[in-house]
Image (cartoon, rainbow, N blue to C red; front, side, top):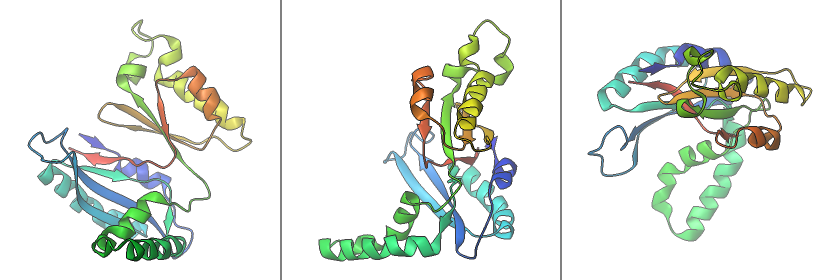
Length: 209
């Protein structure tokens, strides 16, 4: 079980009345071999306050447990006003294509594509088979270059080069860790860690059974 609900709450903020965060509950074939598709969206949520976040979490946990599904949270803030312009274009494109039935899912599709967070966050996805676990630090199994603390230090130093205050949250996943960070020199990072994936607006795991 992975539960990052408290940690993610520390990462979020609401700056105006149109801000919100996007949460999805997804059921995956990897977790449910009998599923006919690779992934099924169980529910989408648009969270625009801490009160809504807190009140929704028991329901999220119960739904994930019942469906053997995962709750994914996009840590870059969305904004209804900003998305309205993208929605307008999407509606015009859909009408022009004749695929008007797809309009019902257009808002969530646009929400997944565009964020409005001025303080951008990246998700550095480090699998345990690449960096090991924090409990392995000091063992001979993993060299210093690939232990999680060293990855954290490299990210910290690369962020400092951008002249912004470093920000790093470390969230456990099923297979390793997500380092939630501000942007940094991706080329330098990939030269050192070609086997670690960096996502610029992907979700992280909020909860999974």
